[in-house]
Image (cartoon, rainbow, N blue to C red; front, side):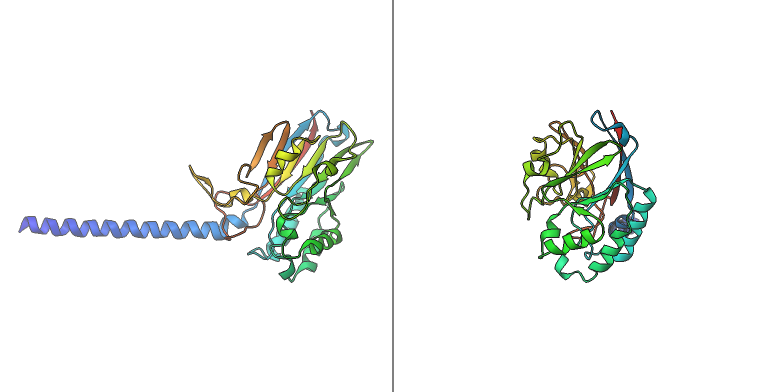
Length: 289
């Protein structure tokens, strides 16, 4: 009898442990989903880096450049959060602002383009505001919508061209390519006419463009597109890497003599989740080196 009771208790104990384990797993899964859905996407991190190079003029010492990317407005990313990001950028007081593509998720279906233009117009940068096309900016018949919106907001849209940014008697160059997936990038045209020995920064939406720009007189490429993998798992890495961002998806890389930086972006695509890939604003400080 005693043996039978022990067996019953053991079975009952096992079932209780199994139930507790199942409950704990369910709660952990729910907590992880809630974090990835609601918390991390709203926690914008500001990463700061220094770009040092002998060709950076002394007049640019201490100048700051802010990069933001991949908002995907309309895909679980609303105007309230967007306005908060605009305020956050202005508080950082950058001298130069660059946007590396994918503003609206579906431009031809987005009803608030005027409000977006007004918000972007609030951004202040004494050395200028520049942008390039991402694949979503061309997609959905969005090419003209994006250009009109950005130009109304005071951004210069660079399409296989460059601009010289002057401070004092010296200048650096900002070059921008058309989107690699849905546009027509012309790499040599982008840099044609830049004076020799000019420090040059290229804006290219897709990181894999570095394989092309590394052959040109370009010193730094700034990209987005990857969302930092959007969902990263320990020992596995990023789960979502769009085409042309499988190799380079987050942070700094050396590609030949080129320095590539991939920004994690602000919005999401495919699924409205971020896990170990928080949204990002990047501030670069320039220094002669």
